[in-house]
Length: 337
Image 1 (spheres, one colour):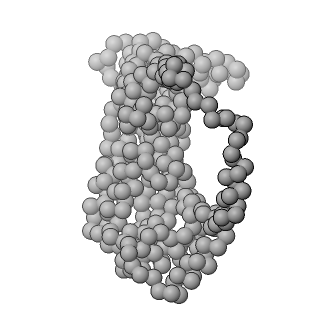
Image 2 (spheres, rainbow, N blue to C red; image 1 turned 180 degrees about the horizontal axis):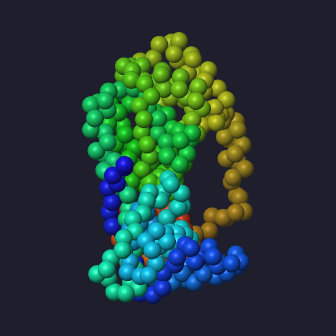
Image 3 (tube, rainbow, N blue to C red; image 1 turned 135 degrees about the vertical axis):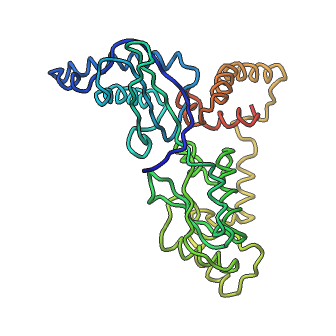
């Protein structure tokens, strides 16, 4: 049996009737069951709005204590509606087994009659940095990164010093919202910590070569550029230079286009006297007016973002919740706004 490391996020409680699975499915027509479900859903939505602890979490676990007439196993219906409302309100991504890790239901005679207490927990598998303390992460070689819900979408990289320091660099930049790969950054914002896996251990001088072999054979989703990177100052042979040059022909990362002096002169001539801005300068008064108008627009949003960040919400969740870009949230977080 798996033992989860749980961190309590919020407690939701109310006094009233429960929801029995038996009575729910014995409710006759489907429309009657929808009405019953919506009644409890509305109750939870109101409780969620009143709760100051709730925030977006990736993987979660639910524990419920109750004192009512409904049998313990029949109370699973109430947890089902509770989790559905969490998902509909944007506090969890989904309720499938990848995210919803389990639930406990206990009868508690010490509670008041018809009292229900539901505790929401975040599932934490230890600090991600602790995973890299194994001796194997001191080696060098080629690795891949992926997320559990889409294991076929991978990133290929190489560690010429050691896996531990390379993985930590990835995690630090992802946590700070500054990762060089914008696609990976957006995935992290939505799905949390990725999985790191060693593909092959090699000598430091062979890392780039082996990495390129994996790039060519696997065509990884997250690698924007399909050419292996820096070789840490190692001098490449003439044959390697020729092969690298051949691979770069027609690549989409840098088109390799060189603008001739004649074309530059033509572009310069075309731009002179353009009618787009006519060389006019805005007055200081006009500039101040535009700046104050812009600042006033975002001040309220900035306050909302700071408040939501203080509660532990992710940038992606805040973006969806109040209708601002993830970039705006990142800039507020790092004091750039």
